[in-house]
Every structure is written in structure tokens, then in C-alpha cells.
Length: 452
Ligand code: HEM
Image 1: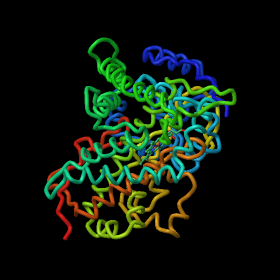
Image 2 (image 1 turned 120 degrees about the horizontal axis):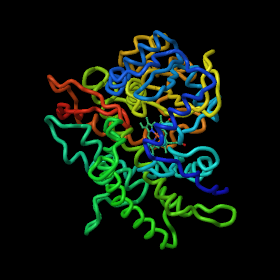
Image 3 (image 1 turned 90 degrees about the vertical axis):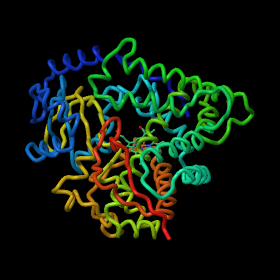
Image 4 (image 1 turned 30 degrees about the horizontal axis):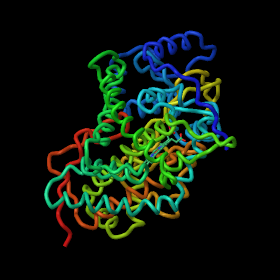
């Protein structure tokens, strides 16, 4: 194993990034795929608020590969099985995460898995993989059950915001199971969970607001939260590094990793991976549980099925991830020109796959808007075309936390469904926030009644 040096620093200055985008666009030798390429603030804002109808309309009009100008920038979107497979698997080496909009995460995440490419990504991922093996995840089950049971003591019959509830439970699980951080450690220490939530909330702001810099901007508040959070994480890194055995959780693994020359990961690199995992794993699992309960609350017969059988619950989770894939967009930048679905695309431009829209294409999915877990039943699942269903991405960068996330969702959802029946709150309509992941904008209030 060789710990390749970190990637070259990339600018996080939004003005420099905009200027670079405009320059690249002017000098392109290959035209953009067909689409809406004229500047349109109305369409840009509509896209930010409600990307799904905009994308499905464009798919109907232009096909699986098209361009939309979002604010200053022409962005290529690819939808559907063939295009997804190209971007994620067969042509994946032609796309950079760091140079695409994933790079916007660098001010919080630094150089963790989500913002790096090439050899640095490969060697980092190799070091981290053992922490996500089945046996390690089984070892985390105890923590998942304990924290769920602890959370359940705060619930009872009546109306509760299940999104807020799950968010707290999932954060405590992640902190304990992945990093051995004790959320209840007494004393003067900062509330790492609250600081993390504060930093994360920056990425739910509208993109133009995220670009503001200077004192008292959301950016500077995010950076301040990051500094306080870093103090906790670096403190834990120091404490563990001083122990004879740094432990078997992810933090321990990262601290114990050595290259052929005995070199260790830098403390900054360990920190960046820790924050990246918290970032990638927190909203995603929380939202999946909230949307699952939302759908089951609307369909009592499906709820009974899911409550009665772990297999049925798994199908319902798969179907939830089809309709509401939390990591709904995969932003990249093409390196060289390429062709997909017969459409030529330039090199050096933003290219996004969008699972949310791909999972609702009317020519791929029967009745795409209907919540129907049986689509994933054995016999039918095999008929889903390759690349059509990609809630965890695919290929060499498929979600590293998939099994951890699935186990956590199953433990929490099962415990909830065993104890309660869920019903919608009359008059409450869900609104979806897209950034940084799909989440219910106003929480997920549901009515709970105790099972007999
Ligand atoms: C329902 C739960 C989850 C969903 C739906 C999900 C989804 C995804 C998706 C779609 C990607 C690929 C993004 C792309 O192609 O642009 C991804 C990557 C990733 N996920 Fe997850 N995720 C979940 C849970 C987790 C958890 C629990 C963790 C950590 C504990 C995690 C850590 C990561 C990391 C580090 C990557 C980057 C992998 C790489 O580039 O090598 N995820 N996830």
C-alpha cells in the first residue's frame, strides 16, 4: 500500500471558479449537447427550487443527454440506464469529482474521499475499506440498537417530527460507531454534533448565498463551526494516537494505516476523511428513514407488510431510495471529449448524472410515481436494466458506506415499526429540499399510535 501525496490544492474561491468556467466555455472546440443554453434567471431559480420537473421535461424534449444553463454555467445532464452506466462504470475514468461541484465541499471536507480523484482517492479508499466490511458493520449493530432504544424513550403516542428524531439518533450512531466519540462526554467540550449540524447547514443555502464571502456571511459561520469541530476531532486523534492500540473503528484504522516505508496518514488527512464520512452518511440515512415512514404512513397495508417481515421492509427501503435517492445528483467534470447515447460532449465541462430523475423515467419504470416495493421482489428486480437504479452510485466509487447505511436504516425502521403505527398528519404536505441532499424541508411530522 502506498500513501500517495495529497492532490494539488484547488481553488475554493467562487469568483475564480466562475471566471474559469466562462473561459473554458468560450474556448470549447466541441459544442454542448442540445438543450436550454441561453441565460435565464427564471429557469435557473426554477431548477434550484424544483429540479425534477425541469429535468424530466428536458429529457422528454432532448433525450438522455442535454444541456441546461444554470445561472452562468452550461451543465450537461445525463439520464437513464445507458448514460448512468457510462458515467459511473465504463467511462468513469474520464470524470473528475474535485473539478466538478463536489469541489464546492472542500471548505468543509478538505481532501476526503468525496473531493479527490485518481491515485490519492484509490489509496485512501483502500485504507478505509476494511472498516466497512460486513463483520465490522455487525460489530456496530450493538451501538445502532442501543442508540435507537435510547431515542425511543423520547417518543410516545402522538404527533412527532420523525425527521428530527432520526437525525439525532443517526448522528449519535455515526459519532460512536465510526469514530468512538462519546456524545455524552461530560465537561467543557464542545457539542460536536451541534457544530457539525451548523457547518452542514451552509450547504442547504441557495447557491448564490453560498458564494458570499466576508465577515458574518454563512461561509464565515460555516468556517467558524468547522474550527470548533476540528478542535474536537483533532483532540480525539491526539488521544488515540497516544494509546498502544488506536482501536478498531474507522478512526483507529486510519491512524494505524502505514505505507511501505512505514509512513502514516497525516492528521489532516485523517480529519478530512472523518468529516467526509459524517457528511456523506448523516443526511442520507436520516432522510431515507423519514421518506420511508412518509410513504408507509400513506399506505397502511404496505406498512403492515414492512412491520411484519424484514424482507418486505428491505423492499420498501429500496423503493424509497428509488423515489427519494438522497444523494440525488452526482456532479462531475469531464476530462476529455466523449460520446454517450450517440451524443458528443466536450471535455472540461460539468457533467451530472441525476438518480432522482433517472429513477422516474416513464420509459424505464412502469408507473414511476407509484410507491411499489414489489418492483424489487426477487424475479422482478433482475429485470431492472443495468444503470437504471443507482441510489448508491456504481463502479469503483460506489458508496463506501452503503452496507453501514442499510444496516442502520433497517435497525431504526424496524424498531419504530415494531412499536408504533404511523399515520399522516392531516393538512401537512411534504416539501422537499434538494441541497445538499434530498430532505423533507419542514421535517416529517407523523401521528404515532402504539401497537397492541
Ligand atoms: C441511504 C444511505 C446512503 C445513500 C443513499 C448514499 C449514497 C451515495 C452515493 C449516490 C454516492 C456516490 C455519489 C456519486 O456518484 O457522485 C455515495 C458515495 C459515498 N458515500 Fe454514501 N450513501 C449513503 C450512506 C453513506 C454512509 C452511511 C456513509 C459513511 C458512513 C457514506 C459514505 C460515502 C462516501 C465516503 C462516498 C464517496 C465514495 C468514494 O468516492 O469513493 N454513505 N453515497
